[in-house]
Image (cartoon, rainbow, N blue to C red; front, side):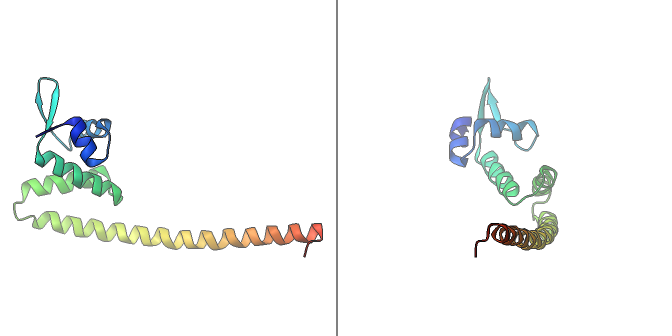
Length: 125
């Protein structure tokens, strides 16, 4: 069992971040008076939450994964939901990647046109 600062340091986050996820009901540390005590379970849940956020999942998605984990000892439903969300996320990121490539091509073209025009007006070659 660990205190809030120790868990925050271990995870590379702030105590405020832990309190945020506690307020959202994603973790439930034990309390001894006003002191929060984090078990391995809560620390593990936080690692999953942080990974989910890093991969771009919403808090709603992460809550669903955590709820399914608790409800299904074989974790089959959780894995199905996770695979589906990953597939959706990959599709979204691929679409963003295509849009980003198109934007870069257009910006480079505009930049070249602007620089060519500058050279044309100043006589530079």
